[in-house]
Length: 254
Length: 258
Image 1 (cartoon, rainbow over the protein chains, first blue to last red):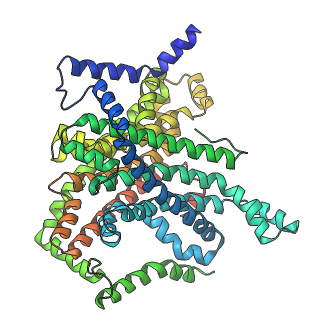
Image 2: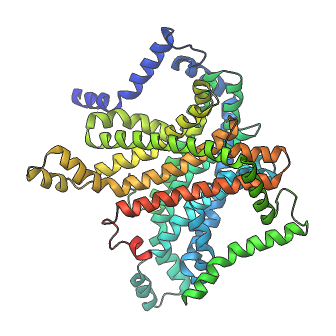
């Protein structure tokens, strides 16, 4: 019991330690509290802003934008990757776009997106879609490519139709890679939505951060950062839950 | 399918898109903010002659290079340390798992406040966001090294320094590179956002100036430069990776692709 507690402290001491140093630095006046509010201040702001619904509202805007763009990217990207992996023509047509386009920083295109889709929600969703599409397609593509042909031959030999092969052999074999890509794309979705909201919007957590930093109330900024972190964590856990359900035969790594 | 028809198919979509863009742009079918590709090239030339392009490029390149270098170095040192020393690992693990899911760009106002609107705030936030993927990759790389390799070296009386440089570093290198590559991608995203939100120089500013002056050809010229910069950096990193990992890639799919 004591050993267990000691183990717990040895593993988690750094967060409370830094919080204590932070609180002490502000409390003793070493750092001006307007620039770096103490954890206690941040906490009280967090509680009030969640209580009056402000943070909840902006967080719901950010999360729903990220979710819609991400879901669209998954719904279109996964079949697209499957088609690219299965058809040579399709692959040759689109492979350069995805593999050469992958390392290009697409964020620079965001100004163009605001012209095409306007400054509000549609441009954020469209841009999130684009940014998520790349990791989802590229990772899923390798999953669909990497299927051992003897599995398909065996199924075909037993008289399975093309649809049955797709449904019962190809899809299950590719699913772990598909989920790996989905997991990579999830934080990307949140990052992109927050950044684009910071660049220009009037709702969402990114806007909330920008507006409160121009008002020099950094407790609000830290509170919003905390909320973003919680949202990211919850969404990732939700995705892992789905993965455990769908890919029940394989445990995730890390 | 022959090599030639593969090549033709590879180029179909990009070339068709460019030609369609040019033709419809010239016919004024496209909205005005989509300047035709030839106009973009002309805009690029104009910026190059006035020298504005190189000033902006130098500012952006300086920020991203220094920030990336600092973040990578710190991430590797801390990550290798965390992988080898449990005490270091226990210090960093809770912090990293807490901060990892937060887009680092959210800290931008705080960095702007601490370091001002100049180079320092961009460099520090780039370094901050590069640190995390590199740290996670190097920590994980060291922990996943087969301990038998280390034991074997130690058993033969290898001094710790040699074990570190000849066993741990080479075994961790492939994963290190994948972390660094993710870090590089993050560096450019953060660079763009940081320059756009709070800065007076750089490629992102060139892009937003193009918007303000309603010179969409200049805006696209900036976008093209930014994309080329990001793409080129990634290519350079991958070339370095191929050289360093020469021995690792034998027999893998990647070598077969080359």
